Length: 379
Ligand SMILES: Nc1ncnc2c1ncn2[C@@H]1O[C@H](COP(=O)(O)OP(=O)(O)O)[C@@H](O)[C@H]1O
Ligand SMILES: [Mg+2]
Image (tube, rainbow, N blue to C red; front, top):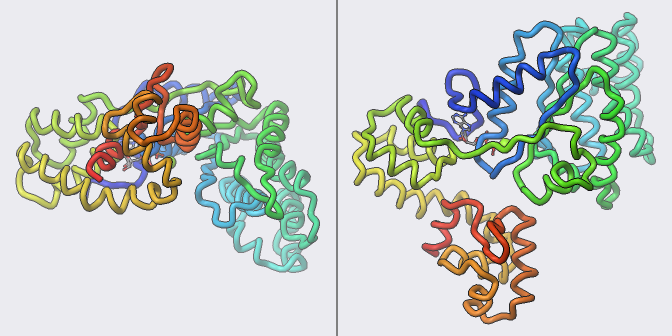
């Protein structure tokens, strides 16, 4: 199976040469602490870019890359965030620290045992870190916990003479982290910014899919990371890359490429998906492709989109459907759903914040994901 729905790297990674070259030449420079903020729609390939950059930096001497995705958290608490981030950082440093055990194993070891396991001075930092994390103080100071986790890469980089590249995928979701059921994520993002400014050997690379939340943390002039990171949009594939991706495993005509490129609008996830469906069939005629696209919308679309869609409020759903059916201005939407314009505007803002709707220009709204739009249209 060549096609995949998972992030890709290595041979399977296509396109984005310029972006990768730029990121790699900056990130491998030990003198530079310039980092990157990647943004783009869901399923456009942000995680793949981070993982490919990490892969290409693997062979670099004295560069340690840590990949961490906020969406991998389970409880979504500040404590969990700090613990898992620290463990991932420690694990990335294992080769440089001569650490035989995985952070998770150490984490589950009683402190008294740990002291025996890790007595050499090299491991002192890790020990202190773990001691701090394991300490089961109920009212552990959350600020201290965050500071400690974010000091760790810098400390390890300094003591091993390396540069640490900390990749945080789906970064804006940090703002949703909870502590004793309060959201304190915003405070954490601000705190990160302060710590980040003092880093000399650590660089931050972040990504985020929802434009408005990315704006809050990075893109707007009032946001904590404004001007601290080089901002790059990860964009859809151009046709030649859609072709390159498809040609990796199937025989396909120019018309076939056109059809899939138009359907997917160059979003690699959908190209991979249709590719995967074609892989199981014979040939790749335009008729077959069209039939598979319909099948995708009917069957896979239900699995992919339904849950997300059901999580919207009934008003939001109605508005999304009407945008899909061709109403793009608040006025047109208002008359279609039988509500007033100011209410519609309010819901459009919610949909924008959730990453479903994009204000293309003043008073003109479209759906972010054209395939999702087609699925909605058929509802
Ligand atoms: N550069 C690429 N080459 C080939 N396929 C890609 C590339 N980038 C992403 N994809 C495919 O697109 C889908 C989404 O990729 P992912 O990196 O998870 O996106 P995101 O993190 O933006 O949601 C996956 O199926 C992946 O295989
Ligand atoms: Mg991703």
